[in-house]
Length: 604
Image 1 (cartoon, rainbow, N blue to C red):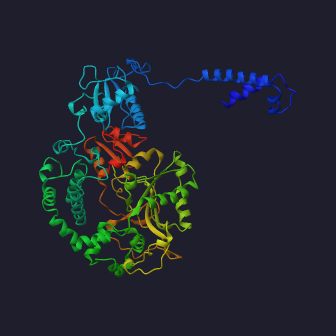
Image 2: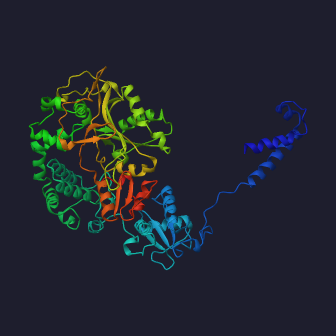
């Protein structure tokens, strides 16, 4: 509009080229000229505004901009997405997805709509929302009322590539907010990736007990028992009610047998004797301590236990056999056992972004893991790094880590180069990754914890102003970013290959010394925990952790139901021999015909 005013003023003064008096003098000397200029400006303003289209009002009735029937693969079907609880961004994404598949989609409710698709709403809520938006009153089950459907109908139709025949299970009912236990147990899907699992649930006491038994089973090398207890706990997390009796889980998958006995005992006695025995056993307690060391997996901890090691102080006897990673983990054991708060994670994020953006200003950095799922505390902080120009990522991680290291912000690190040999069917993560321990400055230096030492329980070092924090930095090409984001969001961090690094910075108080660990001739890790890195030709140890449950279930569903192989690099159709590109997590769920679950709903 500013340009309009300047043109109008110029036209009023064009007949007085030699008049160099100031505008204020003109206004004082020529009132008539001021009125004339004002009227001219008003005319110009009205003319300019008339050329600007008015904001389109919400229409009621048919929308003329819809594609013709001949342009649609399914002319008898017209979709309308309910934005309530779905959000405009997701609605826009689903609209584009449907149109790619040949469906007609209308942005506003009209007589042409045959299928109303909603997410997390009841039928009455949908009808009330439509009435408020369009002024149309619809009766449930009326002859002029379109199908009022749950989004599961849409995801199944997208997977099928055509409109699915509407079944009663797809239709929304007038359910109240209270959910009966019978209905909930009957509708609980088999795979964790099909269930909404919130961070806070209704059966914490039972779930905690099952998870203790699952961890104990993993310590003993029993994968079958580990999976059994883990799946039972995952199912209970998604229940929208508190269990009152073991009879309520009789129809739930994975909640029978041993798990049902545990559930029943806790419900009846408020305690499970088996769980208490496990918690107090020497094996369980020792394995928890040993696997809590950064760089120590279950196999190494089990070997140490069989060699008579029970505590951190016992490790002094084999200090010369420890890898550089294990020494760093033991050195900072006390700090690394403390939970990382969200505030601390955000301060780490500032450090990471600052370092990366000093080399590539518009690099994208996303905090993943439990914090992305809504947790306020975690054991470490994971970041995913990408850029639309994939060449900008070349060497970026090493430069940023070297810069942070020079500033004293990194206590230990090892960078695993990107693997180009991962198989299409592999579930391993081949992204370039840095496994590090950061020295995070304390927000309140006067309340600093004591420094970690090789013997944390005997530590008497002077106070310091930083805390050791576990940090993983992952670089993913832009074309693989969505798959990497899905994999690194979890629940739980993905199974990680954490190779031995070649440099450990030992910072105690204000003194700094470098310990070169690249030529560790005393590294006697078990053969099954070594692998060859073809990039730097160094021996590396693979920590084999229990796989994350949500991601494991998602991959199991992909393979068993869809005959597809999913990993953090992409989705591969085994039968069709093709890859499925994706620009968002939502698109990956759509490829698999799954209802999209937000990160906060993946706490399986």
